[in-house]
Image (cartoon, rainbow, N blue to C red; front, side, top):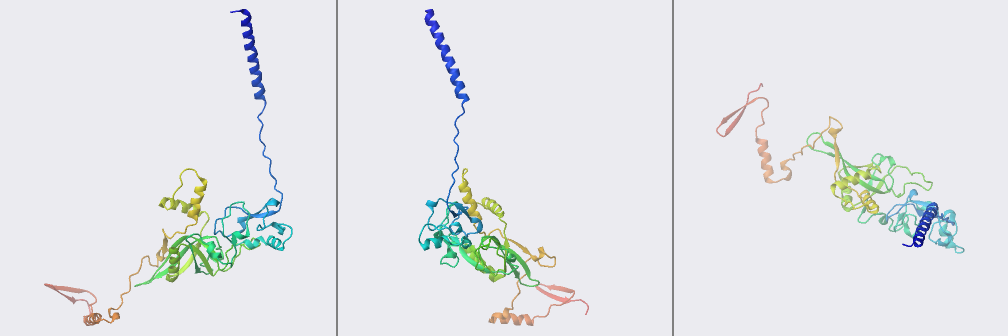
Length: 354
């Protein structure tokens, strides 16, 4: 090989190696540009929005709403504006709608589903007293049923709309001897729709409204509504307030019993729908009870026998004959006796002291 060509080849390889090293150092030393998110500052009046998803039938409380700045050019007439700012120039109707006090929305019912962060519109809510108010508060296939309560049976007035309660039935089973006193939890996880005529738990000032309740309205399935009515006829009804944490226990019980279908995969939305379906479902199975003997040793622990009614109560000829035979039969002896058997005949001879 020609020496001159060999030198040119070696020089070209050296230049390529130096170029490669310089390029590597240049690219490794320069940091990649980072995309910086520029915060968007919304300037405009504050409108009332939903803090969480509000399904149809949700009763509005103070925690369901909050104010949020909204672009002025997107403000609509039906929005609720903080401070009563007018929606647009001119038009008394528009100003009047914007000046509505948001505290008036407490206790209203969602007519159409509202997603989290969506502005509240007047057409999406139904106020108490308006036509279809209670029907809008009911879930699909549910019924409204009311029971009378007292300060004791109503947990001293600490039950509010939206709470979940257990319904207990206290009755006295009569019969021969001492009657059986028993209390049974006949229904669980029943949603309270209204207390007296109030469907909200707090007043305009945000403070809870306490007081002696006389009437509680429940949301129940048609079958459970029938059971509530029968329970009122059998005995006295009492309510037990449930903890919010009981939803987890109810979910585990429902999964174990096969009442709900566990979604496949890792879908948070499907899991949330499953939890909501269990939390909103009243139950009338797996009831528990306590009898008088569980409280006091001097009370009964079993159902007493039925009292035997007189055979002549029906006035039939057969009953009259049985009554005559019973009255004509000799009285059973008291004290020690001797039974003498002669074939099929058995004679009872008293041998006790006179």
